[in-house]
Length: 486
Image (cartoon, rainbow, N blue to C red; front, side):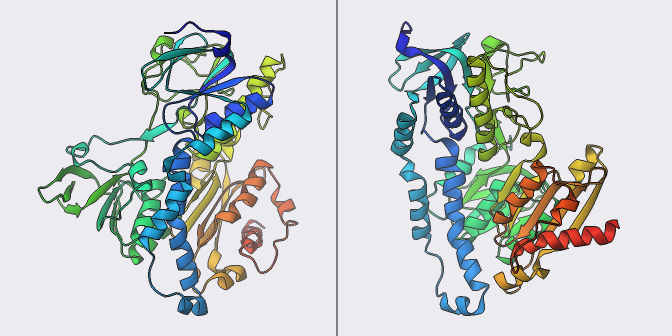
């Protein structure tokens, strides 16, 4: 291990150069500090190469084709089917062909030092970085070490499953062939999006879920996605358990279900959740369990098993690894707040950690936004009706048929969809919003602003949606609430 020299001492050392880590380091530098970021894979992380960007590129062509076919004249103008090679080629461009040179250039321009290798905490404010050549250097932090190592796909302990070489989300996002038969285990966001994508590319998809689809969202969301997948030719089996797996001599994977049925496939994608990337970070030196999620307080300081800071005043965790909201945009949100807070402390200022404060991550609990780019799209923010009721909040729930809105009818013939408002009945403000239908993603931010701003519904009546747009759903929901409430 090399002896630390002045050029290996930084104000902030960040372990993990995904979007969260990049943003922590960037905000620290913008706040006048020096920062180093440690990464043993590609700079840019999961989102850039194996999640957000490549998966949405896989889905976009099919969505555009469906939109054209839902209009009579445009539908007649569209000939032929999707070219899988062209779709995969465009995906490759959005993944930068898995080359991080552009992201590395950005770090340099932002004034952030890149330390290539595996980072491990070896002492207070001290990270050892072991490169691919085995050489180790030491980076010391004057103010903070931030763990932003993200998460990885979790493979459930199904007998034989590991032995069939299943795909994870990374394999699906970077696949260079479309299997004839694809079985997907897991009915969450990854499972439904990849069922949509590979079904559109010509695979015969079987989607297997232990629960209803999209279990964290309003029930009607998963129901509509399941119906659409079945209409597109997929087999969707909910409340279904996979009991065993094996790959036979022909290369076919055979999944045995709990009820004895057999599902045959050429490839199996496992999309059953995530696990924290904390196995070899030196966390055991701080009394933490390697491989566990990192609990944090409101300042994103890592907590020990006794609930007190594990690295008082210097150790923080942001993004997936703290298990607050496993979404890229929420990780970046935490990162901005944390980077600014570290810079504030370094100046001797007290961070603003009150609800909705400058350095708080309040939205992680009250206004997490998410889009599922399935067919149909699902967009949601805030609490579901069940979550709000479970928290003891008296709620009003207002539903409306999205297809009855004039803008939706113009958007596509036979447009089908649904929208829901969850209202705090005491304060008369929006707690949650879910909308399902073609091309609804861009409706979401209006709801996010209403929830974060705690805009009274009486004031929302004055936010007049332009006609004829799909945003008219807001007026229809308010009208429905007014009829029921008054």
